[in-house]
Length: 173
Image (cartoon, helix red, strand yellow):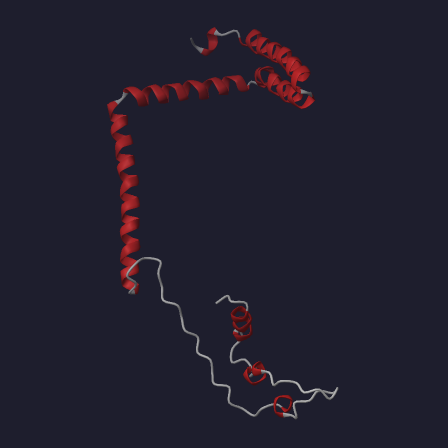
């Protein structure tokens, strides 16, 4: 059947009328949301006819049918599909081989494993502060044990040492 053999106005108007009836039923059974959505879908065939979009939709549909029937019945097209599949497999295999070659070049035995870096900290040998050597008494007259962390609180050697210290105290390293 060709495009010119179809009476498009009665077909589109009929589809819209059937859709409106089904929309009314959907409205009564499922509520206003379902009814409005069904009405919106129902108006599309008549809108396509009035705007002239039905000819374009016909062309798209017939081209899709020709493509699918040509795909199913043509051995040349199947050979192209097989070659496209082989190409995809080769891409995946070459990517895996490239990943292994890169991990060997880095010196790691398995891909993804790297040795953790050791961060060196400078020795904290410097003059003690007055609070750590003092008499051990606070302003209230009670003795206070010397804090072991007071001697370790040297000025940071780099910008991230404070963050690293907080992470270590929380058990995250």
